[in-house]
Image (cartoon, rainbow, N blue to C red; front, side):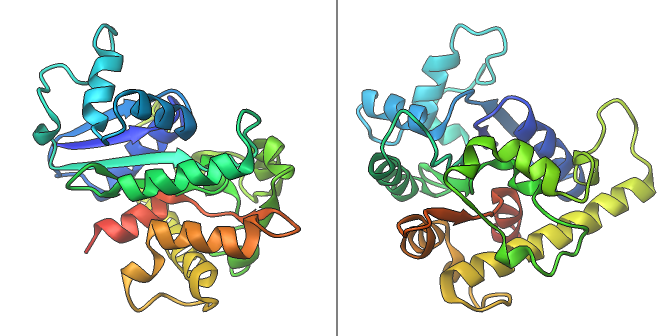
Length: 255
């Protein structure tokens, strides 16, 4: 089984359903869990649980008495062959200093760096709505888009206004309708564009080159975060390049 842990309860699961339909139609059983809070609250709960990275134990305890408990029948973390986490950077968080935010994300990326062990963490910059921050696909200027920390407080609205798409329909199946073959093909093409755009942008952040990297390791989540801090976050502008975790996950997953 594969565990997917999402920060939110709506946007991420909806995007995942489309990803599963297009890219994983015959895969092993997937367990989907929405944490319902940000990465900094997850960090806090893990620390209270001895901080040993036993994510599944924390989640099983958290959802034990919930009606929608996704872990019914699960005994230990060993029941999962792979674990993936998707959370937002949200560096405008008002409850922590920027130094605390960066320290906690750094520790989380170190703890969750292998999907077959504790799990592998993917970060949205600044949040999952980055999937929408694009002009009509393919967008040759995507590599250059960034937002300031102050702008991130209103990023959902900014992304909506910036996008050439009126909704998420260009990347998401409408659950109320059965998609046609043409619709599925259109979605697949759009996701392929998004994968390439985010790969190239990640490589631009990490190396300054606007092309597909020679090695996937060159744009690992840890390296991306480090370069984000050095080149953008910890500068006078305090900005962050817009980058979406889902396309990078798909790039990593398909070996």
